[in-house]
Image (tube, rainbow, N blue to C red; front, side, top):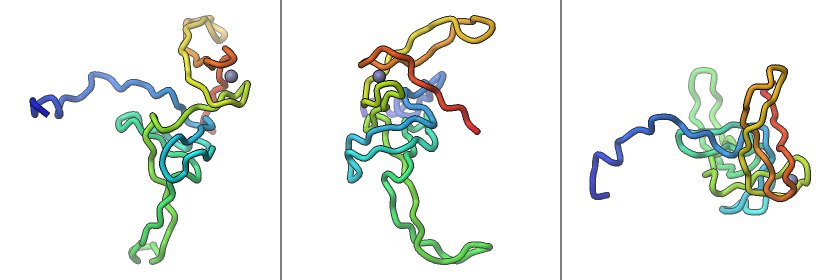
Length: 128
Ligand SMILES: [Zn+2]
């Protein structure tokens, strides 16, 4: 770090991640390498994602107001570079392309994600 100011600079906007909530991803690194899981949430500010059942840690919790003491399993965030999106069409882990096409009833130009293997659009999972 040559310039200490460089570290403090905030991004003008947050780039969207190539991984979205609801995607199934393949874990590429860490103790859960090779595992597949569903993305529970994304943390664009940290470039991290939380994947169901991956990177679990045992957390010792003290008793507090309405909280029982004990050991709980907590899912820790993973860096996006350590996961690969699994295509909803071909079921293979793939890199993602972004494509702008007219979509929806108003036919407005919108961005969609496309599988680099089969070229089909990746299905989005809307939050319930
Ligand atoms: Zn595909």
